[in-house]
Amino acid sequence: MKALPEIAGRDEFDALIVRTDYGDEAAWQAVIAELTQPWGDDGEFEPAVHFVDDPVWADRTPDEVLAEARRDENLMVVFLADRVTMQSAHRALLVLDITEDEEEDLDPMYYQELIDSPSLPREFRTAPAGVHDVHANLSIGNMDFAEFADAASDDPNRIFRSF
Picture 1: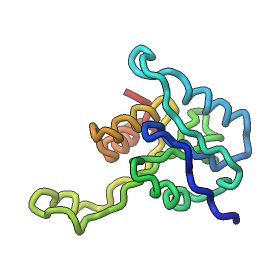
Picture 2: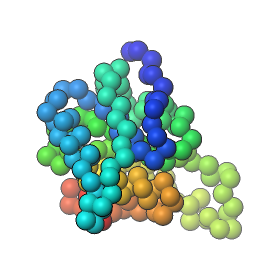
Picture 3: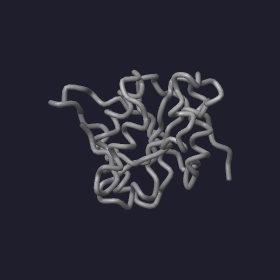
Picture 4: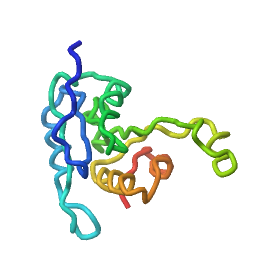
């Protein structure tokens, strides 16, 4: 496989969407259409997304995408439009936590539950309408990844939809 190119041109406030499945162009266009709709309670926010749509990313694993995405210091999360996304009626994207575990840096007095817990969730699925909520809240530290993963696990289809 070809080496992955550096992800370039993303504004620090843009959600990063990486396409890894190229089997259904109509499905991809539907994902784009949903992600580029105004969002918020009354559609008061313009979408801020950066699409990586290059066949060199085809069939790349989440770990491969994460390795490249981690080069961006301002990024907290990356969204994959993978085969499941394209084949799902919900067009649910895979959400990957970019932060790496740094348990050795945690103060045990304050973070014992994190240190003792089994691994925290590192991925979940979100409908396109939820991408902006996830990205915005993680970017400003308003919520953490596990809160969104928990909300997704409460859904019958295990998909975060939006607030």
